[in-house]
Length: 148
Image 1 (cartoon, helix red, strand yellow):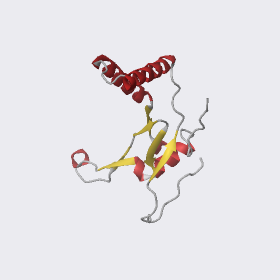
Image 2 (image 1 turned 60 degrees about the horizontal axis):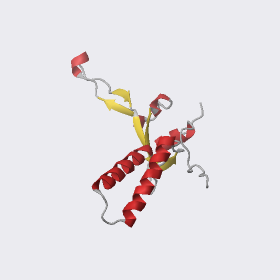
Image 3 (image 1 turned 120 degrees about the vertical axis):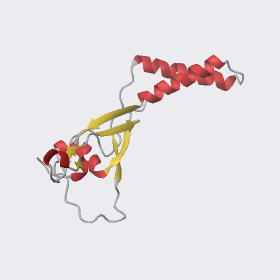
């Protein structure tokens, strides 16, 4: 296995702790494209008519909230599976005295991290970002966009 993480010495104050990673946004379905068209039509109706019907305003708000949720998705990752040497990917749980009667060493429990992408972009810890990039889940640069 290729080692992507190096033992870090004392972190300098200017060293970044967060990074942006990118992933291609999900393709829109025909229904979502139809919703986009309807929302655009309602926006133009509202712009031309200052005294709009409340039902039109409510429909536009609903369509915009649905379309906004389509641009988000969450990935669940457990980088500790591939990198057990990195303590940040584990919870350290003190071993209970009730089990053995004596204090013991802490138990390591693997973290499952939720990475939320909004419009294909997420801001994550540098180590998580390196993990996502090395696994091919995300990239350092935004995906190329196709111009109509």
